[in-house]
Amino acid sequence: PIDVEPADGPVAAYAVLLKTPTGRIYCFYNHNTDEIPTGVRDMPRQPAYNLRRVDMLGHFVLKFSDDHGRTWSAERTEIPIRETAIDRENVSGGTIRFFWTVGRPFAHHGVAYVPVHKIGGVGPEIINASEGVVLCSDNLLTETDPARIHWDTRPDGDAGLRPPPDGGPIAEEQSYSVLSDGTFYVVYRSVAGHPVYAYSRDHGRTWTEPRYARYANGRLMKHPRAANFAWRCANGKFLYWFHNHGGRDFHDRNPAWLCSGRETDSPTGRIIEWSQPEILLYDDDPRIRLSYPDLIEEDGRFFITETQKDMARVHELDPQLIEGLWGQFEDDRLAEHGLILNLPHPNEAMPPAVEAPPLPDFSATDRSQSDGRTRDLRAGFSIDLTIRLDSLAPGQIVLDNRIENGCGCALRTTDPHTLEILLNDGRTQSTWDCDPGMLNVARKQHITIIVDGGPKIITFLVDGVLNDGGETRQFGWGRFSPHLRGVTGADRLRIGQQITALRLYNRPLRTSEAIGNWRHTRPR
Image (cartoon, rainbow, N blue to C red; front, side, top):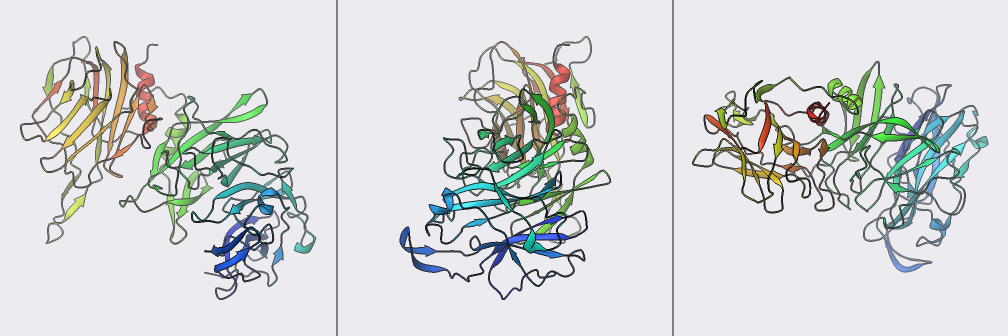
């Protein structure tokens, strides 16, 4: 590693980079130039204030490299940030600036833009008020003397990018994208359980009223207080990283989910509509957090970097996952890979029972180890069916291969009017159900249940909608036990009369494939 600032100097943190057309690389970061210490001190707006950390205050500065980061300028240059209400209202009354940045800088029409996240209060929750601004320079890309670089703070006025009126005091870690008509799109985190977005048609001077992000089908997206970043790709489409649950704090950043976006027209200009998400990355320990990503695109290949401020990792993305996301808006093909049962057969009625096809085990004994430890097979399966329920009464068995000791898999209706999957290996049992309110009576519905033995997650899609918990629960996806060995049950699979079509797959389908299956089953 090459130090931009010495490790034994004042605290320097939250560095982001921008490369100019000349090859110069600028590094922008927080610098505690005044060496303000942690500890209890009197502040103008709060006596005996306990300053817990000093990496999110001080001065915003830059250094540059003209040799691809091998060496950095000896002098650092301070970047002026226009004072706004949130600065004057912080605990110091504006004498100390609180801020940080993790947003990727960008350039558009010869102007450089650097995101900054202002902090209005630093309390027991570390940050209890925040909003976003972007610093603009009309000559950074060409000026060689940092002291002569011009800076302008946007948006205009005394307030930055904030949450919707009911969204609490947090609006931070803004991520910007530029659309084909020059519109700026920004997405950022809140404490409302949803990501927030806005558009600017005048290069960041003004913004539309902040709103909670939605999928193309109109459903609200869900996201906790974690980084959620969007990137424009070479094909003009977009990718978006988030965590797909309605938490309001810093937890549950595992797994990471990915949406694709495409531009469409609106009365005021171009906007982005978002696909439904796929699981992108996971760790076996649910408490491990995956965050602060960036996207690298090279020669048609996509790579994601991610870190939780300590260890950085790089992952190449599966091309099939990306292509599936691109095509999710129109794809109506039936997924055939891994299809091991497809009923009813042409010109036949649905049978009440069939020979049960073998489903993959989730784990096995590792024969290469003398202690017989577990080998995680990271396998899974999917159930894809069309169903017509005459009532939502609980206890209806829809599909079942269990034996007397409970081993096997079953689908059944539950008391909150949901469909539940039950997985049992005789030692361990796991269950999860669809979101309440998704099932209807006397109407055919398409349901896909995906049991993914990689992240050990179960997802439900009902009529092409990935369940996310809605307004009734934080998570629409659920974890099953990593100790569950499999769902081998009876030789016969019993099929309830509610099922009008049934497909089994010996692998976990992707969200995009499940949506394609739903679209394939719709009347033409």
